[in-house]
Image 1 (cartoon, one colour):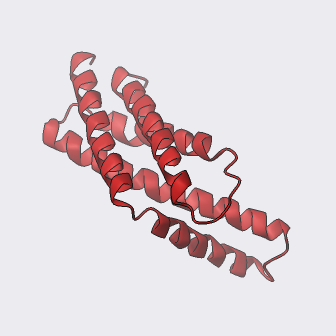
Image 2 (cartoon, rainbow, N blue to C red):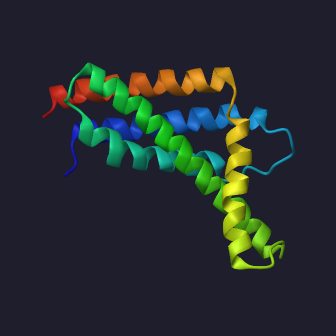
Length: 146
């Protein structure tokens, strides 16, 4: 059922996903065509906000902060897996893999490689601070518009 908390969570995490995507681009050490990178990560933010953060609004400030951090971590994990899968598909069309099992294993290898790029203090602090701010706004929206 749509409500204000889900809407605020979806929009807030989408904006956070977009900002974090822009912060990741200079950290990538090699030349990459990012394509729809920002849009994909913003859509992941919408899904995490609507399905995970929004329904948990109204449980208190401490719970909101915990849910915000958890949703940010989930957003990063899903984003890294999606980007790893995208890279695996790209390499599959270039016939880099001999078997489907090798291609599936490559998803996790690529995801780990992408996850290591995210170990930047400014990126982590922005992600956590933004997630907490979004969660507090969602908590206020959940209390205001029940």
